[in-house]
Length: 294
Image (tube, rainbow, N blue to C red; front, side, top):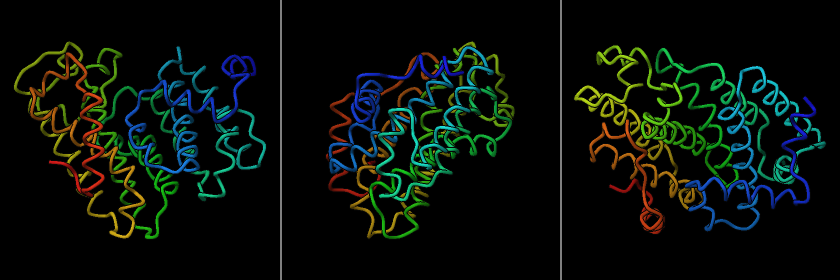
């Protein structure tokens, strides 16, 4: 196990430089919101996102459950070391100064790791209850930690972050239906596929027909419901501090609208996205409007 971890341990870089590189390589929509943060908050959020990328890569790249489980267990131990002021990895060393400053709860980091382990264990979800737990662990937890870094006065802001995390992850799942199918994964709840008379084979073989349109429509409506829950639960007094999260949320909200409007079944064959220019415009619009862009 020591060999596994040492082989991925980066040398000759400062903790923050490693996190900056990890985040930059991801080309994530997070980056569009970072520029509006103070240096301290930007560094904290970059370290958080680097952690998420690191453990997510384990779930995505592990050749087997046993190896992936060992690596994730190492990270569970590393989080315990972090909260005992003895971090070893560059990412946790970058995170260390911000744990107390932003009151970041250890339980959320463990939940994130648990979510990544679900990707090792599950390639199917029987119902939305199972899927919602997954979405909470891999996305809502990150949203809550991010909201704490952004700063808030009203505890209802954490409910906003929870619901926004669910909405963002559901958007990812809809966008990646085809790409996930190529990896043998189906995140759409199986009971909902059955209700629409869609077989797993039709998803895995990229069969396009009206049933797929109905599927995307129903999944899109659910994601939109969580976007509404999120914005409705964001207190007015925290809208300014939470603006970076709203910017990222709006990028995903516009992406969801594009999927719904432009031949929804096409997501089985290609990954739909937004240009960087459009993302920048969305960020600028969100600066003056604390609602989802229609």
